[in-house]
Image (tube, rainbow, N blue to C red):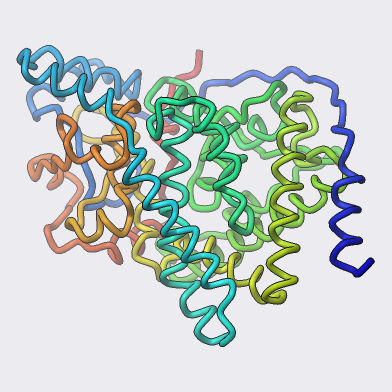
Length: 436
């Protein structure tokens, strides 16, 4: 039996028994920060449906972020005609099966092609550019599977979410399966979730998994210290984010370009450990089902990686890592999607906008596969990705509101990326959420 067969057998046998865990109690606490304090520089992003007059009336007293997206939907429906309502119902009934299948086939084929390339220069060059686009496409289609907007078959959506995320370094299965629904339950409401609560909470949900990414660039919760490991606070994102300095963009970019890939690399190692041990050591308090699904996916991903190494060598895994991380770094145009989606901005009257979109033209929409229409997605979760540009209020940019934050029409994706590293950003208006 050769080394490949031996490793494969060991991976399957060693992880046969999922880890049984004890449950601990955790609660989501609310945070408070000074009212009226602006949370960051402006972006050429989507702004509120409210006009100036309505925003002022709704914000006196300040409404902060209480059910932000629900308020937006209700405002539209109060003015909608019967034709508008029928159109919205049709959008919710639509599925992304055809365009989603084509996009998933394209991005999976691209990632495999990159992994199989023989020239290292071309391999890593493609991985850092085209590979980043393919990774975003993979995320978007699997995201539709999670929200059941890919197909009418729940079983197909679940299986594709599991299988489609295997062709990656870490992939997006854990984030989507366990932490994205909770994200929608939290964002735009008077609730905050800290980094420590994501890691230490019991049950199956990660509460709001976006916190895991946001903490590298943004403050998340005033009193949040991060996860506790062996009695000590242990968090890569918090440690390196604390090294940032306000308005030191270049310094902050360099720190982020080290900390974010480092954590992704650790997640890859953790996937390997999970496949062999049968439980995820990063989330000790999670349910047995959580650990079982994590083990199953990590084992399947390990098999794919072993096949890739056997066929194309270790550089194939490195290329997948570069593709997955490249689009999150400030040199990549699609990083603006990640940086702008939940910046959180206080506008006139104390109202805060927890979710944003970026509008850089239809070609950018295509490259991002509409992931840049993030506010639209939160407004209408049941609409598939390819129809987000057709929802009420889509691509709406109000100059009158934009001017309050010195936004100009010359803003580009690079300007968005640059502003994200000023060091004064809060995640999703969390500095305004009130304490009970």
